Length: 290
Image (tube, rainbow, N blue to C red; front, side, top):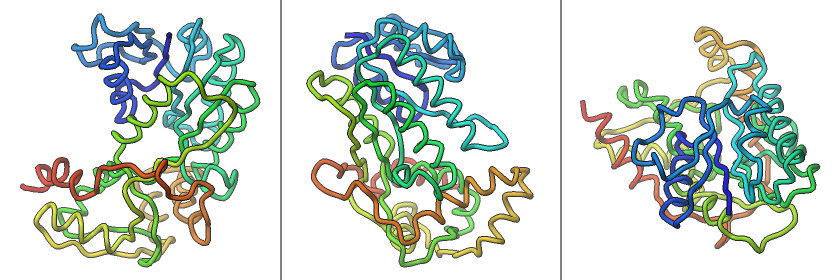
């Protein structure tokens, strides 16, 4: 079985590749720079060098594919939604051209809304593009990645966890490695058909005060939640050089959650095992020790 994996050096993609290799497969990986691959994978993967936005490269990589793991990578476009849609069109073209029978797409909670969720609207558009190919498609509706905390190390060192969401708002937090586990299992299965969605939601929903307590206990320092006004957050993003569409893309992801009920509810299938505390002990504690 030929399984193609995009973004194989990412936090999820690298886990997918590892599990496929451990399962005895030799996956095809589409990677912009083959030099970034783990040297241990040499000879265990078929490597196609190319960008996920290069339609010819994606078509070349997926020729004869039985299954595709697709991720819309960040593009750096002035409008992130347009960038994700451009990537989605590339994927859909390759799936249609090569009649790829099965696709597993790394989507997000909120993509089902189709609008009002900032950057995630681009993932919703990609879902529709893939659905229209006629392939069997599973959309993984993922929760908020633990690894997003790595972008706020300086703030965490100062004892602050910032958010524009209300303190009482609960949302699913998930380890990207667990997303990789679910994706690999789905890619290896051959008997599912149709278009479906599957939540990948971590062990439980958390409020930001709960996150501050859990992470604080893991890293050995007290954290307080700073509930920022959206205008202040926007000003900070503009000062960092983001365009107006990029600012809206970031803030819209939080704004869209208010009053929103996800399509994929928490149940046995959508719950994954790794706790935020365990992840923070392994990944944040060493970084915040100094």
